[in-house]
Length: 616
Image (cartoon, rainbow, N blue to C red):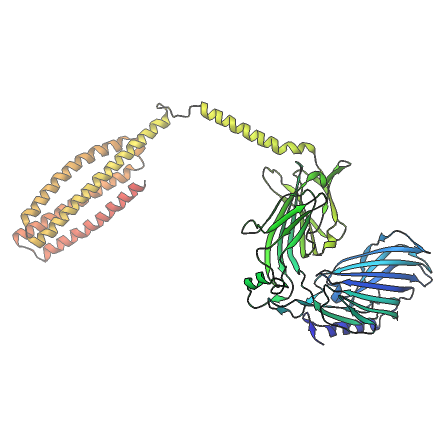
């Protein structure tokens, strides 16, 4: 037997057969007739089962057991049961039955068991009709799992020709409805017939309990296999007249994976031949009077959408930026507003929101759905009523002008199908005075802003020339000016030092002693003039209290520069005298070298002090 969907079907069936072989038989109930119909026209596999149940035992029965094999139960998304009790030729109105998961003692553990509780016990000889509706997701497996752009998508469905039940079945039939007449293969049994796009098995009579005869149908299905891996719906309530809906989709084509190159030219020329397995658009059925509708992704607004509506509905046709083939993904967001009075009501001092739970797109399978109901700030006593099991918790959200945050009711459910798109209710209490909180905050904010502007335009913020702060600022400005002048004098002194050094180098190169003496004479004259300027600046800085912080560094710099000047003059005199007397020797060179070391060290200290003063 071939492997389908990554698992060996024969092993699954062997496990089921071995388990049910030794299962006990429930003899009180007998199913006189079973009519099963499975709809495979979309990726949602819908199984409709009609059971006519009789109680042939002596004791009353309060429940009917509904088993499913494990490979089906893990994909079971939705299960309901309704009953019509037969009284002669008439039937009572249908009634939904509560269903729960059970573990009957002694029953096969390879089966998942559900119990439909009857509205009242079924006595001896009683009869009733059960209508069972089950919806499965991911039950159609692509086979082959990888196809090219030009290939049609083929899928495999597996089930049993017999109704799996712990009760005796007197008569039964099973009908498989396909999306199109193209059938690659199907399991051929007695009384099996293919007619157009339907395969019918049966009727079969007097079938023992736990009978299981596997069937496999391999057929073409090119419908959209759109799966939302994650969907986050945000429902934000504003008591000023609007309900804002925002839906974030993370979508994937869950059909056969596309391989090979994609040719957009072939796709546009023959989309139904060179892209039969791709889906091009989705339809979102929005509530009537939906407004401010948008459709966008991370790039921006997507213009490939159409919107039309009437008094009963609003339809939004969205088309992704590119056709989606198997394994391809996309993400987008749709949003719209709804009139508040259509969905929010008041009763007994409470407000309650009544709105649908699931996605407005009926083609989708949703692996994980999170619904966030954002209530107005100040809401309390929050309760939630949902017609099926969910995970629920609360959190807070802060928005503009919020002080304590808005309560958010978070509902989470996995494996969601269109049948879950039912109405749920969120009840809460809200004080009407809280409506005026944000308007009053805005009014107060603008009021104080205008008052501040009036005060600013009429008040005099200038600093008085007689104030201490103004006087201190002027004194500091004078100190800064004096420091800048002092730095200029120091720079000129160092420039004269450099000229003296240059005259000595020229002496050794040209031998012109008279030019060297002239340079010395000019330097002495310039330094005397600079010393006078420096004296007046030092006197000002010593008398100013604002210069107290920088004055020690200034005095230290003056001392170092004076010492540098003396060493430089001494070096100049020794070199010139030795040149004129032609008495250069090791003793002279030693003295000059010693003085030069001190000059270099002093020059570094002077430069460092200038940098410190500049930073201060």
